Length: 139
Length: 139
Length: 139
Image 1: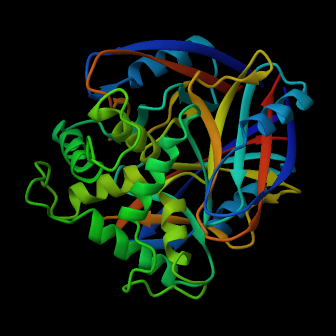
Image 2 (image 1 turned 90 degrees about the vertical axis):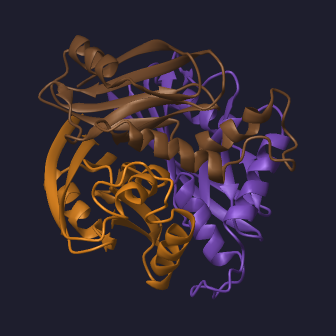
């Protein structure tokens, strides 16, 4: 059993979701592992990782709709607003979604369901470089 | 250290929560591992996994109450509604809970707290087969 | 590759967030592991673990504000209220945040982002002993 670790950088052009499944599958392939676990960790507090439907893009538009409705940008009661209206909402969105996901590796590939995709979810309304640490353990 | 992996299929009869702790403990037993980690991954985007109180069933009824109140079925603003009123709400419920859980293994058993149980949470109002990939790593 | 496991007990004096990053880094140091994964598991259903900004404390005050607004204490529709107004809301807060986090280990340290901290989030309004199982796997 061995550990393989690497860091990827993604440039998120704006608030929204970006499918990183192919990038992570490339890491799995490079690791040479056949069976085990793949852990993907986002090193930020206003960007997160989600697993959701990879087919119809309106799923992710509806998720964004729910987020904007329930985690209000620029709520007048927020105390932490140094970086603007999307500062505190970005932290709460990150909290309610995931900082990391662990996905099984089977036959040298991420063993997700047919309709599942792994997305980087940028919660800030601007361009950011986001670092993701990928750690694989298995045989 | 070794990896042990298997897939279980659960038939969820309707929207609701189903205690799968005994099924996962059986996998732990079968693996022969004494100490390590057990990762349980749901391969779907409208069913999820939760850890919550295993004693009083009204806890899970109140969770369902909160979900229905805050993640409205059939919101007129959802664009993704091909499969009915519980389609998009199912995706958002999955997002806010967990696609996978990792639980420590100690002395050959899941090392959860006294009041913790692991439940499959079906978010669709119908009968579905749900696949769960279980991966154990340890000694 | 090896597994290292230990249990820590934290006394949470009241509802609120408590930075446990230094405690977990001490476990990493003690394990002697250089590269791998650190899994931190909270054995309770009304206390959870969050990763959020470690600098400005008003971030965590705003998170608490959002929680109180959206996961109402003592909602008249809750059926499960044996232990008071914070009983059921504590379970729902735990559900929407995390029972466990997995964090990469690199160069013998938790490899979190500059602004990330790991906090125990006590959701009950009282003093509790909370047990956290820490499992590390790596080289």
